[in-house]
Length: 365
Image (cartoon, rainbow, N blue to C red):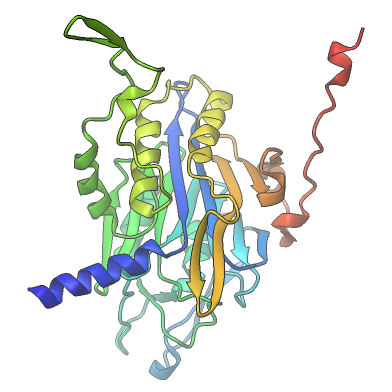
């Protein structure tokens, strides 16, 4: 028992030092679906915004030692997403397709074990090609949910995954508002309805849902005053109902903070309000440089929010901002990009971010 407890503590300690990502989605009263996410990392991953037109060929391969054939399939849907150029082939960790299916991949270290491919398997894909396969060939969460049990998703040390192993779980959302979380635990596929409309990192999604029971006391309405003996003691300000809301940047705390905000924010009426709602929620988990640090040998490294993306899955638009332009998003009309027949790519940091508007004239006499 003690050995098992210590093993669990060791895993959680590793998780708490892991890379931080937070994804949130919301549906406006007019049925617009907005899904946003932050991407935190401690290294320069050369994040690249890429366009994969309809018909892009995806190579579905198996581990080399099995000597199984690589199957090449053309995609059914155009995709725009974000990949890490440091990884050969550019694995998608974020994106949306022309049919309104969106994806965010968040790291799940310590808990992810992908599936084992056997020599008798006919359908397989490496984790590095999974994002392009999922978005390129499925129109909705329901479509992808039906397809996942038919394909083996694998990873091994031969994959060029950059400075960290590709231990990832995914949240998918479509323009109907349907959402699911996809994890690979113990070599088995796990699919969860995204009832929280939030995903962070480790532990697994079901653990995060159980953990929400520790915060049932949280409320948006605080106690304004209380009679103590003969004194009427008043609150110092608003927000007292949130005493106990975790403020650190560990995955469990970010999950609780984002989920509370998501389910208690004033419901948005339309796309603009939904984008603003998601932006405000993501602001509560934004990590500045120097705040979330860990040691890598003798070197101190800092996890920080390298970029933020907000997807309008209903109208096919994307807003994105890197660390240096956190308050000035670039907006892309994806329908125009989807109509292109050639792939394209640009570093996220090289996007044409707008300059701040000079409002001096508003107060000039």
